[in-house]
Length: 155
Image 1 (cartoon, rainbow, N blue to C red):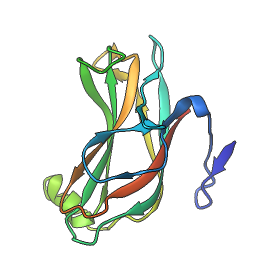
Image 2: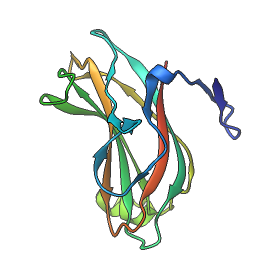
Image 3: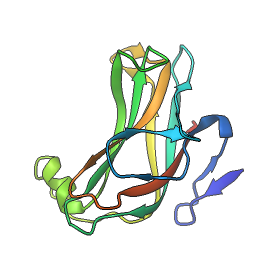
């Protein structure tokens, strides 16, 4: 199945083996899962480049202080018991809250439901991390949270 973003005409091939998160609300920090089970992808021992495609169906920003950071983590452990690094991150939510979190960067546009694409590689500081997973860091006064699905598309 191929998904196409209408505005930019970018398309990404969906592969069920690369699904990172199925639909469901997140209102607190959490690893992503599919079917109620934590999802860890084995991307092999070499360099892997891809994009995490995130389709957000709902995002609460009613209090004006909500921030959700989509994180791609890597590890040499298939259980993520140790050796965990951040490979890529994308904050979404209340614009001024994001701006404040990033040192007064001037960000002031609130994010909405829609498609977000997070490019990443499994390499950090000349080390390849064989296992990857998604994580959401949640900050602010959260009543309902954020609902999204995610999958990896290979470059």
